[in-house]
Image (cartoon, rainbow, N blue to C red; front, side, top):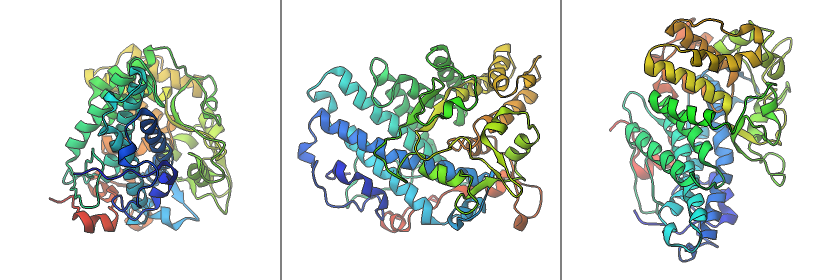
Length: 450
């Protein structure tokens, strides 16, 4: 595949509106002959992070509807995710936006950064961010576009794509291998120096990646490293991590709010819009039939319920975590690492240790001290406890509950048109695979049924 000329930083924000990731506008500003120095690489990385700020929260919004933690009102385009009747009108936006981020990243990846003038530290920061973001984007893409019945996913693209190039769908296993290579390279480059991201953010993302890939030994090691570093701490107040600038010591990595963003352009704009306490414009409410509602509403003493939920006569709103659209978007925080470490340790050893119980109790004690576990339960009981605790603690954050339900292949509550009871994984798994943009299917003959 040949390199294309890169889009200038000035028009990067327009890329998400393109019809497809090959349909880039004519290049201006930073052309190929100018991509020879570290400042241009840093500009590409900055542009990639800026694009990722809008890409990352969108998948979480889709996921929360698909796992049916919420019901949808006011916004018909989101109801398709709740109904598992996916069309391409919104997944196309996500796909194109992701490959716009990858365009920047892959331009850096195929440039000879090592030979550019600059310190080793500055070069390592650029390369660390490149590998970190590529792992992050493909982790999201693979989780939402893979077709489980065939094991095929999105095209794995690691070089800039030209208008005459063609790509094809890649087996999910190959994408997972690439994601894990990228995140470990990010950790290597960040070991002595930080970029926009840093070593412990990459290590925490690695823990998440390995956990959902069911590589529990590595998930444990990475989560344990983050916790043992002592650089982060669990806040005493459940609301403390969700301050506008996300500067709590519990937060490991966030997509930053910029005061120049303006209305509707911050990392939390769509999230705030969805969950706001507003009858006419908020469009996500707590689904009274789903597991999250059952867990939260049956324990009114849980501080998370009191802090993040507002019960009204007709609906319960989940409006407390994103109380304004002018705040940074938390991507990884320490609470996730404790729950990941506990479950990964149990899964790899098929036994429960006191450390696992202590990890759970750190989260439970903050939410409601009376719920701490005072003995060591059996393996299945403890895994059930962790699933419930993770569902409550990480509700509506980064699609965690959706990913966890898929990992464990749990049933999802049926909607009235489907009957009663739970819809098993075997019925809904392929329905969750996002459709590709129609023009990309035509151009590349994309199919996940090779």
